[in-house]
Length: 326
Image (tube, rainbow, N blue to C red; front, side, top):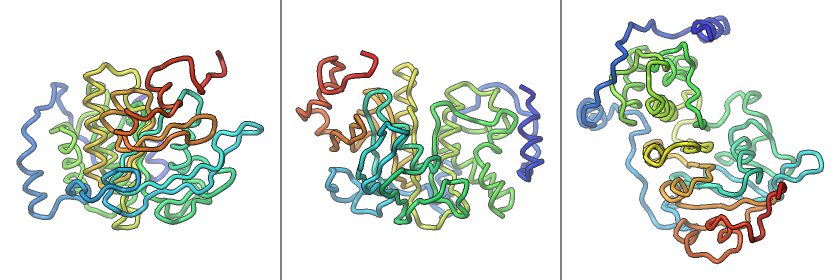
């Protein structure tokens, strides 16, 4: 791949407001303690909106610590069909700010469809999808002011020819009128929040896979300048720990929790990995055959005798969930 291709195409399309990056060494970035400029800026009130305290409050009806906060996303009798196949059948869901939901179920159950719906990449066949109380009747690309929904991909999905600063601050460079100095500060604070320092001028290819993953999480901490102020974003994580070793899983799982708390967001994670469910979930929904077969807290997930959950936990071939290929 020619590393100038996507930069040239972006500039031709009007995405050309990027600073000129200075060469950077390829050596590993230093990792000073979290205290310092970022903490000082936060105390001085100059930290971005993501630097908020973790939410407290009473348990909701699902046992989460959402504190009775705003409802970020809702599905009301929502259905999705592909021809004769029903993917989702009249499902209902309410997700509050500060709540972390993990959606589980066998392959092909429709979990990724839920993320596509929330991300505005697909519309329901029936029922209603609301984000911040507003019905979503158009795809995201067709909306003049789309809701603040941020998707963290399984792979980092960084633009290879743009620097780390340009990748993390992409929305700010494209849509905001902030001076470059302010964008640089916001990007640096987002990177520091995920434990990265002094790598702003590097290209993605100069980073390890783990560092690239953290850069993608830093990008999710950047507030959308076109979003309505004061509203909690919706963070979506698509199989974030698939194919990773146990230590790498733990690091990514910690990032999911930290990112959701810092952004004061509602988080939806799709995963099959039990450690990810354990570490990230406050609430779990099991999806099978188009319906939510179980919905409850992570504590209840461990002790319920629901046959769907029991089979999922054990990995047994005996139970109500039978893959089509068996």
